[in-house]
Image (cartoon, rainbow, N blue to C red; front, side, top):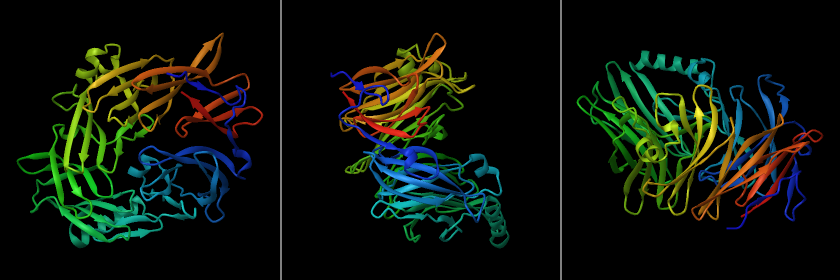
Length: 498
């Protein structure tokens, strides 16, 4: 295996290949940050830089933001601006399945749940053909129609609507609007007409907000009927859902496969995890992508945790749907039995009742159907983190290998990316080195090539510079230099040689 080198900007001599941009001279506003633009399969499209131009004239609660779009080689593709919604905290960008760039906001979950004045901030859509930007209308469902509106109703307004609906029609409507990234929209709804949960159904609307189909979960209404519905995975043809279906004398826990074009059930597979199966892989830093789809297969990684009768039952489920055979299969790994039994150094797996835990950081689906998962040890008391753990699983979810990377207190996991057309992968983390009361940052580059791990350690700081890495196209890394004189304006694409 060739030795891996990283040439850090500001610390080493200039390389033959070097693409640089000075972010300060590209826009007039205050620089807010740079983010990678990824698609659903974690392929890199480019980068999205954001600048704050100031308050808008008509509404001082809103800001005008300027953006610049770069491709993966740091070539500037387009720029423009938009006005924020006051309920938005931060904006991210990604490529949807229609090959559009979506600028999507984050917001305060507490406000979403409890603030009566909260409304859902809007996405923005940028065409990658002409780079024109438009504000995406929010979608509101009234029990019959799906209606696009410029601004969503506040929590208080929606509560008033439901109160009025109960007065006029005699029931409360509960509906979940699930916008798919192919411009179609699912509606999961039920009506509560004491003591009945009525018309528990799933509906699909197309990009013109026209209803395509309606699936009823029960033939007859009964006060004991109830359904818990969660989307697991989907593409333009198939929808996989986790459905907990409860009736008077029984409860069913199934994966259900819907034909997305007709709404017909294609396959049903019971699962043994009951209410303790979780669709989203949550990290202390946010949700982790656990899906990988090809033209013939949909793959999902799910998590399950202990139930009331078995608190130690915790692990991961790999779910695969094969379109050619219309078969859904799953395999799982039990962390206590399958991992801790042979790796006693991971005390975090020993006792689920204490504050020690392993926090999932990334999932890599390799071309040979193996999975590489990166974890970091964490204390849930104060979110202090320590060692990095790399877990390598075969296609049947059997543990092939595991490696623990000892770190200093509060090290920082950075990101993972694929190598060699998804046959291999590399992940990066930062750690501190303390000598004579001085603290210096080091970059740890960890490759997984041909089933072998290798680590290189390189300095990220010097006397005048600190260099921060970002995810880049395969075989490269993007570096941003913090410098006392030039502040943090320059970004630079450098090659990883491996």
